[in-house]
Length: 420
Picture 1 (spheres, helix red, strand yellow):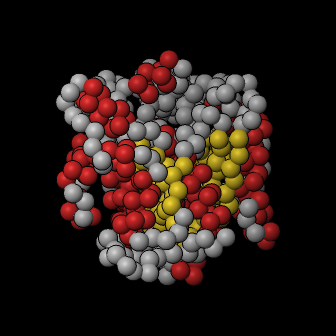
Picture 2 (tube, one colour):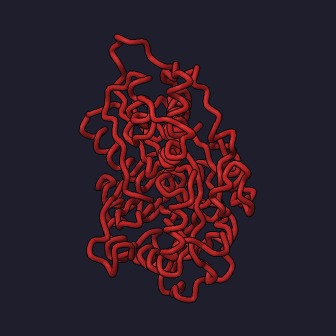
């Protein structure tokens, strides 16, 4: 299974894979210390998308009326734009299909975790500043994100919206993988979106002690005090190797999903469950490739939220996973650069891992200075990347994404045999 194309809208104006890679190599911190003027109600520094990215939408290109476009959650609009871009980069039709055609054997799997836009509209209705029309139902509902893509492009494979919180987009990869294996579709668009338009989620996460009071994610660092929220959208096109025509950015080698089960609390991580998901992902390779995949792991793009409890547990599970053939296992977190994209975070990590393999370089994990004193680094034989490193001959990377309700995901990717 190959990742054939990648479309992104990420903080720091990373609106393409090339822009994201440039930001990572330049060690750009995309978290804004000041709240943008178009988000005064949020009141909290975060890694925001630009106002133009969130509000700009070429509705005419998709044949959508002004009234319907106004009712659409910006996350739906952005998923639609990125799906069109991923199709175009994958050399497939990227314009709306005429009615009455035969359709294409493509599935759509998307993670849209929340709908702040619906809340804002409903508040405006309560204040007498707006009304609820026939487009609001489809414009607000998460399932219509992927369903609208399937409708406009006449894609006849499964069309599924998933929500497992922060592991949503990697769970989408797992479901898409199984759908492809079952021949329910011949290719799959997999994506996620997260846009913050109201303060209540941030208030709840602050009350739970999840968010950093210093507004930085310091994965693995002794000063780690929580995560900073981020916005973003990403879509990948997954195809079987014989359909990708040599465009592959990387290969999807193994996928593992699971659940924390009865841990110390609903949102408390479970190291044994994390270890089981890691084992499942690398066992998912063919029997001939599984041992080689474990031995050639170059870097792990960790869930890496930068919490005092979560980091030691995750690093402990990684250290016990027997990856990298005895070499010190390098770990990093894109959340330190662009914030935690929540439902889209796994897709962001997958994008970084794919580019890391393509360029054979692992970028620095920002804000890592003093190793967390609660981690036995020497015993675990793990490290967090304090500087960019060459991958050498190693050709596998792993991506973890964990939901706060306990849903876990890990995807192992390998360097493409033929790269653009």
